[in-house]
Image 1 (cartoon, rainbow, N blue to C red):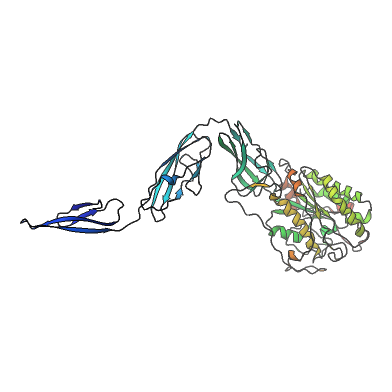
Image 2 (image 1 turned 90 degrees about the vertical axis):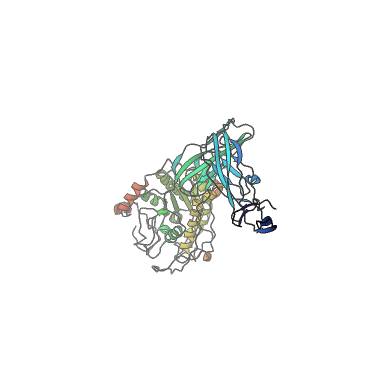
Length: 549
């Protein structure tokens, strides 16, 4: 009675098939006869139990224009389920039959971008589910028509380049032929990390990279007639940063002190930074450093003023080419000369020497640590006050001079072991922290430009680690001692003005022969000709202990 079909099998049994998708109670009657004219009628009642019925996915059609993004309608609207279940998309082709890209919007609609310059018929499939195990597959067919728009986008020429994290690359994209309004934007299609843009809408924006590797950048333009885009591949190599700790005895340290260079080295290693200390020597004053577990190279010279250090650079820069210089110089100069500008002039000559070797060198220039010894104790504060203006006058487009405050929060009595040189309990670590903070700022491209774009899976940024430790001053430190915790350091350190860094582009075409110099430096065992050293040596007259250079 409910529309099912009944077939007699001729042996007293019947084959019953319920009506399509029916469930509930059904029945049919049959007649029985004795062959002698006697008959009767009986009823067979059948209970049809419900089962889940698969949904039905009906195909969809759409059209778009060459190189233009299409958002489809809701493909679920014409899909059905006799059980009345709520349907949803459970899968889809992320790449269409003709190489287009498909992205689900999570609401039954899709964003479809045809392959670049493709014209013709394309399609992709999707799976629909009722949530109870029933599924079906539908097809979306899209006709991609030729564009009548004159909008043209060029993302530029593929590039392979060598850049440090703080150096910018200028994109060379363009857009033309727009009709009516125009909106543009760069995005990262793929790559190992984030890209930071000076202006994410500008076809020729300056950019910096948060990692090295191959990036695919897309420049998309939308006018009143539609959207088009173009991609460019940029391969970036971020080389090891060669850092030269440069200065006088405060940089070199004596044989009883590790110098700030060791805790700084460990901070950089723990932070995950790829650096190499460079310099023409590895010795401390009067002998080796009490530690050999870090990069010993440096350009610190006990007893020398800035001109004397410059003399060392004549030979030293034949062995290495620094990318970054940590320049703490002036204690000895200010002890002898009360004309502060003379020390600045000597410092300017050092900067010029480094730039002659590497036009893109970054100079981190220290405001000096305080001293309790006369006359430095009274000359250092006004000298430090001149440093910011001096740095601004020395900064160039390719080679910035960045001020690093080593004075604020540093106690010349408590943090020095002799009123001049940093001790191993606090002074060396305060200097290391000041340099480290400035270097981290330099290495962080997110400080340079405010717009950014990341691929679907970007590399995680390096985070600053915690440090621990104890140190005993006045003797060779134990090899088991480590760095002090940052929370014990009370000094505050100023960093450079971030907004200026947008202009510090550097010139990636000017790349010194690093490998040849490094091999020569290693072969030289980091020592200068003793006769040359003696010829240039300038003694610090008020130092009473004998020493070697």
